[in-house]
Image (cartoon, rainbow, N blue to C red; front, side, top):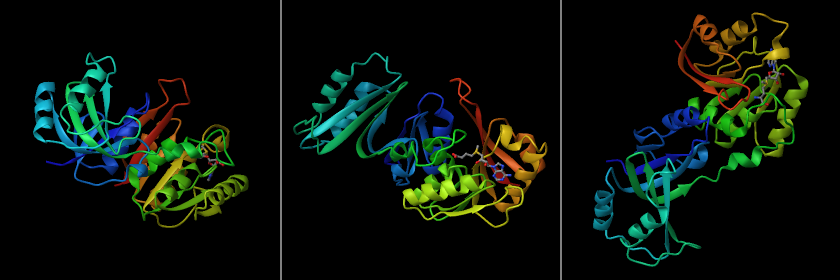
Length: 309
Ligand SMILES: C[S@@+](CC[C@H](N)C(=O)[O-])C[C@H]1O[C@@H](n2cnc3c(N)ncnc32)[C@H](O)[C@@H]1O
């Protein structure tokens, strides 16, 4: 049995992206829609949506059975805290009484204010997990919501980080050929990806360079046209231009995506409409399309996960 469980925070509207990121970064078996059990030891701060890494101590579908398993562990802990999470929250199992039951199975003193050890009891539908928290995300992407240079067409740092994780590992060379303010290359560089950023606009390229300097990051920035850039990368991750930026060119997506397919074998392309047909006729296989923002009235975004055929 694998002994590490990863628990995903999926805010409304981000469930599919959060699950896709976890599938890419924490390969293993899914025991619930928010929990994957894996042998891989992953730093959850590398991810945008994985909230906890826990040492899995017990799991099952029946409360009494899970409590029996926990009792058999003879846990001893000085100053511990038990955190109880329920999905959905209205599940009729009072948090306080679960925490009390479980605390009675551990030898030692609870300390809710300054625990030296934290346990989590996770209840999702009819599945229960109990484990010791090894790491909780610092959600570092929040610090980059307001970069020195921002553009309104940009995606958020959290979404950018997840998109990078769909196709990149630390050490990979990644290109964003339409970088805008540099949200994607900045998130990539911060997780150890060698990031390159281009934009047709001088202003955007300089803005990305200024943002990279602000965060002390080494990102190769240049001015160029996505339709004619050259080079070899492990992956392209980009939020493609839309609206006024491409009004002058009806075949823009075809030309841009045909060139992106030459630049890298894997890519994540974000756009405000589906580009499945364009990707397929330019030699890319569509591995997944994740729809964002349709339900909450925001600008719809389609996250295409593509690989060269
Ligand atoms: C949707 S914005 C990208 C925003 C970026 N992801 C961010 O978070 O700031 C698209 C960018 O593509 C750039 N662009 C437009 N046409 C381009 C072209 N032919 N080649 C490269 N970049 C282009 C625009 O200048 C714009 O910065």
